[in-house]
Length: 182
Image (tube, rainbow, N blue to C red; front, side, top):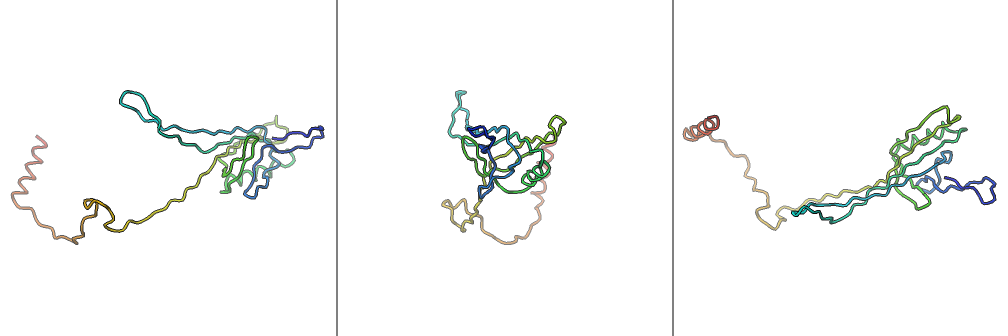
């Protein structure tokens, strides 16, 4: 979004902008008309026996921002290609709005409208979402590290020879199956 200077000279200062990791403004020929910032959360609710619910904590969802952009007519093709490359790529951006700066934002979608009414330009409905990377760590536990001996793996006894069933065991197996189908 841009605002005009106080003298009405037409110079603009960007209030809403998309910035790279060095905080240089990107996509300067894509003029935001509006920005909708969604900061939401979820409450973890659990049912109680009396029919009520209890909330024990809250999870903060990733921030989502939707822009309505108009690409400048003289350079809309190149600007759209820059937006598309950013959407296809892995680069994360910072988004500055009037209320704050949102870091680690990635492109989610870049749908656009091409109509005769736009007078030689394109309107883009850009969606971005905050990305939170988590590095998983794995550790192996040393053998016998559990406190309860029942939790320790069974001993490796190697290969055990098989034995054939006795006539009494065979008769018992047959009678169990026969009882099942009666």
